[in-house]
Length: 68
Image 1: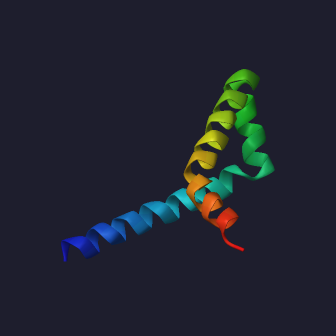
Image 2: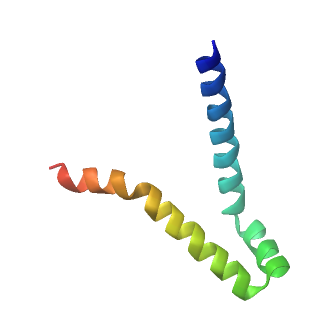
């Protein structure tokens, strides 16, 4: 029962993270963040997020490259 509860919490957090990422990809949200954070901070955070995405996706990309 504990494992099921843990899996449910992880799935909920993943869903919320996915929806938040979708929201932040909209042009209006990006403009507001740009205005609030300033250009340098916004671009630095954007680079770090892209790097994190690349680091998380490299095993999947590696396996895809090996498949015919």
